[in-house]
Structures are given as C-alpha cells and as structure tokens.
Image 1: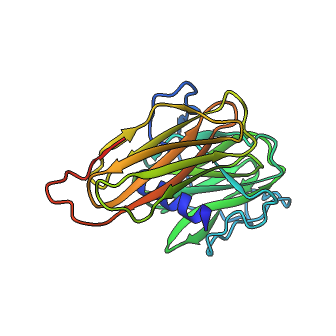
Image 2 (image 1 turned 135 degrees about the horizontal axis):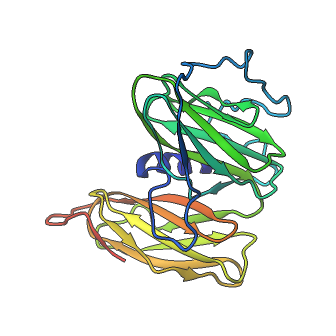
Length: 267
C-alpha cells in the first residue's frame, strides 16, 4: 500500500511539476505525426518483447514481484500532447533487474505508448485507466507516447525500480490539530554522504512551504517539524536529487477548529 499512497499523491499534486533544481529533468522531444493510428493492437505491427509482461495493477501492488520493493523515481516532465503529436521521454533504470512504467493521463482516447518493442497495456488503477508495463532487465531508452485521438491530453509518467535505494517519509502525530507541530522524518536506504533531501508541504488551499535542503545523518535519516495552522489534508513531497534521484510522498491530516485560518502553516 505504500506505492498506492505514492501514486495517489502524485495524482493529486501532479507528476513532474517544473522545479528549480541542480539536476534538471530529462528533456522531452516533441515531433509531428502526420497520421497517427487510434490504436495499435499488440498482435499486429508492433512486436511485443516476450521477456516483458503487461502490468495489471488492479490491486495497486505494482511492485509485488520486486525483490527489493519499488523505488519511486522523480523528475519526469509533464506529458502534454495535441492531436497527432508524439513525445519521446528518456527513461533510466540504474541497472535495476525489474522496473514498471505507468502513464497517467486525463484521457487515453486514441493514445498509445511503447518502450522499445514493448507496447504498454491498458489497465485499471483504482477506478481509472492507465497505460502500464512491467520490464525485466530494462535498458535505458525513450518512452514513446503517441496521441492519435481528436483531443489534447495531459498527465505524467511514474517509474518504479526494483532497487535497494528507497526514500520513505513518516509523519507523527496523525491526525494533528491546527497549530500543533508534526515531526516529518525522512529515511533513505543505500544513501551516500553527499545526499540531501528537499521537503515541500502544500496546504489544502494550494500554498507551498519549501524547506531548505537538508543533509542526512550516517543512517540516512533527516527530521524536521511543521506547524499547520489550518485544518484539512496537506500533501508532502520529499526528494533526493543526484545521479540516483528518489521521491517519496505523504499526507498530513489536520483536524480541529481553525477559525480565521488561511489553511497555511509554519515551516
């Protein structure tokens, strides 16, 4: 269920929102397609690599076959396609033995996506449809997304790696009253001495609170506090940049009387 929470928060906060970072997200190449098919059946012109399998995440356990569990990778740019357009999104897998790709769009009408010879399949994900696949021994390359429909589409890409390097975030206490302090604890396994974590909390009203980048201790931990002054659900995103970036998300549940509050907080 950890991955379910991560992807749910990504759907709420958006995937790959532009940020000022030392390591910029991969660029997106946009090309014009004269004639784009409305669908590409796996059994026709696009060969499907038999070493891969279509991901069917109805249960939300998109990393259930991963030996090390799923590590969420950040920094994928927004996907925005007009009718007849194609985008190429570079993906890197750090040599992981398995990885899953999920394409979350506001509409899949006429949209196809493939990674190399592997066509992403349509799967149900908690009441919505996504294009997804599970890769074995993946090699870095481009995810090709084609909009063969009549309307524009937008969304984002989520990649999970079978990797021992995981970023997790924990919040205590939950729930908390307005004005009460919560402790945000971040843990990065397989960390390096130069790793730093960035934390951003967004209020129910959309106000962001960005914490300065913090160093991790020798165990890969970092702790900070946040005092929300309004009730509601706050979203929390933690990022580690560098050559092996990681992402973790969470929620802060604030309940109680917040008369006169603007749903903000005090980092």
